Image (cartoon, rainbow, N blue to C red; front, top):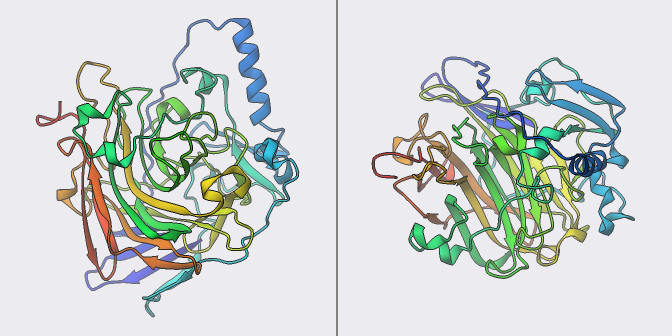
Length: 433
């Protein structure tokens, strides 16, 4: 992971730390004032409580060390070989890959001579880093799950899972024709006849407001293969999200997701089921991100790279330019065991219409893309990984938003940001109800 400083002509600093950061008038760490969504629940039967506790015992592995985060999270340092991923029946004999056989090579424009790099893994960019304590080598940090976390979900089966995704063709119809899933998007996507082996982007991080506990707002990359209308869609996902149901608060958090059957039974967020293998002992998936972007103020973003190891076939996740987080083993997938066919970048919210109107849940910064830098959220430097394991800038993307009066997207291109877009919106407003 790197912090990259680019000098400009206007006394502004372009900071990229794991993360790329755009700073104006100096650096400030701002902590989001998070709402606590953990409320007392109705009485739980002893049988249900027993089932939930059994599940928690399966995913909360015994730690060798525990760290208390200032935001209330408990981070368990679990031996790498004891992490939940290896409980998957397809991974019983899986040997953990320590590192990929090769990182994607950069094509085209190289980093400019005025760029300086420094390692920032020891800096506080996740809330649990604040006190300076880290997990020892040979372990991985895992956010501990609680009974209340599970009780906020619709059911034990639904805990840590997404609802079914809407296919690209149907998304072009009017919002009322999209069914009752309540998911709304503002995305850029690429569909090519060439095989895709990964994607990269730098994503602006904000703290969108969430109206209902079972709504969320996220910004992510999707790596997709298979049918959008069938039961066999494979998806690998990573980004940041605010999800009161999943985490019990309104803090933006780093997340991952995967499914091999169109979000039906396989896969989950983060490490809430067996599958994703974590290799990094300094990054906790599901932990809160800090600092955050502010309106007309300092801008912070994270750089995420997902690519397929050309020899082993596992799908790796990296942060910044060279920090490895872990990987999704090839054994988990059908179509993605080969390659991807589609990549999507952008935002997604859930609109439950709980009050009989559109939600006020925000996407991105909560502002429309027309407002631009410092006000609207962005994705920049969109790239894909080709069959030669090379990062190729994306020049031709399609954009899509089901309801542009609520959330919208505008794409463009320049030499510094490559292909980029602003996206998002406030949800409920005079034109969106």
